[in-house]
Image (cartoon, rainbow, N blue to C red):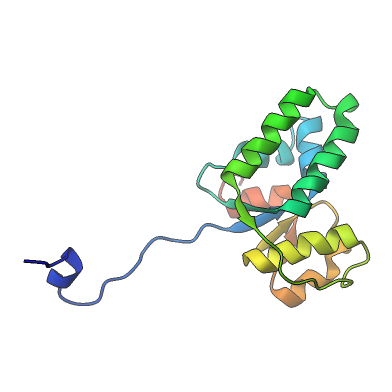
Length: 159
C-alpha cells in the first residue's frame, strides 16, 4: 500500500551519480579567457555548465572578478553590460559558498588566500590558475593547482 520502489527492491541501493570535478577559477584565468578566444582559458570558460565540472564562487571572489575585469574592460572585447551578464551567469551556474573561517595568512597574497579558502570550503579538487607558485600551500589541503590546459585534459576535452 504505502510501498516505495526502494522498499520493493531487494538488496542494497547505491547512488551511482558521479560527483563532477569541483574547481575554483582564479581571476587571471577569466582575464585570459576574455582577452583571447583561442586559448585554453576561453575553452574552459565556454565549458562552464557543460556537465563536465562545476565552478565554485564566494562573494569576495565575485567582487574580485568584477573589480579586476572592470579595470581590464578597455582591453577586453566586452561592454559593461556584457560584463554584468557574465558575472550574473557565473552566479547562476556556480556553487555559491559562504566562508565561515579564515586561514589567513597562509599564502603571500591575501587575495590568493581568499581563493584557497573557497577551495577548502567547497571541497574542491582543483584551483585553476596561471600562478602556481602563489598557491604553494594548497597541497596541504589536497587541492591541486593546475593551469586551464591541464583541466581540459582532466575532463577529456583535450588530448
